[in-house]
Image: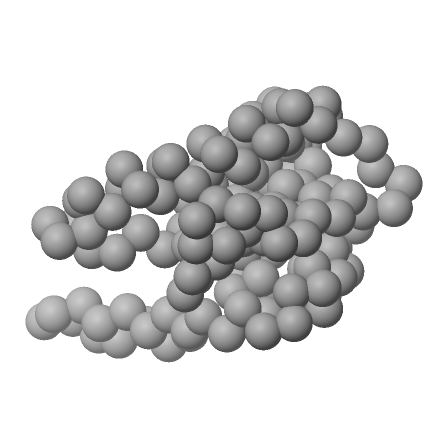
Amino acid sequence: MDCTKLVYEILAIDDTMRYVEIMGEEGELIINKMKQGKYSVKTQRKEELLSLDLYNTKQIEQKFSRALGKLAFTHVSRTKVHQLVWYHNDLIVYCTCEGHVDSNKIIEISHKIEAILGIGKHIKLNGFFEIPN
C-alpha cells in the first residue's frame, strides 16, 4: 500500500480535512501530513503522545474483540476537531477534520475514506433485510 498516495487522497476528500497520520502495527509513525493552509492544534510532543495513545487504545480494545468483534473505526467529536481512526490491516489511520462539520458530513467523509482504504461494509441483519454498501 502506497501510504503517501493514501494520505494525499484522504486530504483531497473535502476542504474540511486537516491532518492524516498513518502508523504501523507497533505504533511507529509511517507518514503524517497537515493539509496546506491549516495549522496544527497540537504541539509536536502532544502529537507524539497522541500516536502512542492511539496504539495503546488499539491494544486495550483488542481485549474485547472476541466478545464484541474486531475494532474497525472510532470517531471522537471535539469542539475544534473531529478525530477519525481506522484500525485497518496492520495500520492505524488517523484523520482530523474541522470541528464545525455536522454528523451527516462526517459519515460521508468516513465512507469516502473507507472506500480509499478498500474497506467494504456489508451489514446483514438477521430476520430483516440487507443494507448495501
